[in-house]
Length: 183
Image 1 (cartoon, rainbow, N blue to C red):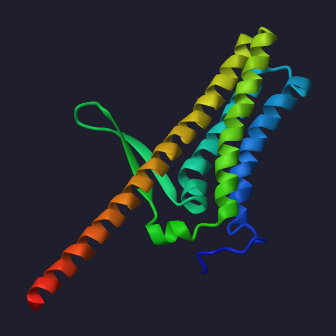
Image 2 (tube, rainbow, N blue to C red; image 1 turned 90 degrees about the horizontal axis):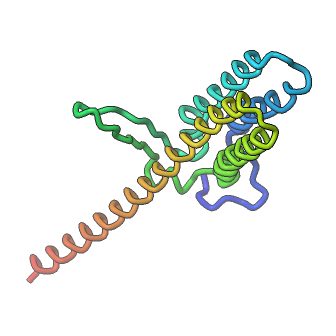
């Protein structure tokens, strides 16, 4: 695969992209349209949060790994402290990631949170505290993925910089040693 991708390139993982967008759109659409067609708050809450949870799982465990080469999780250590864990592909694999896939991943991740914020503001304006609860849960799941993947991307960049520094230092050291061993 050529690291420099052509301008008219298609999505490398169209099925993953579809599911990355599908559950986000389904949760938002159901929440918006259910107000028109469904009178039961419980049904709206359960189905919307279920769709948002499916989206959270798909993004965190599938599309994040395939579309941008990142994975994160959180563990609690022996002292009871929260510890973030990150995984990323190696530098060469990250350079070959499809730009459209990456673009879709990051933009939909942020736009979904923005959409939930607007729906939360709308619920506040209409004095619907119960619907604000639905929005709060869905927004929390979106923000958790944003925070996790943003930290993961920063950690990946730091690892790449450390690898480059170590490689340059190692090359310099071996060049220096070979220069002195010749003399």
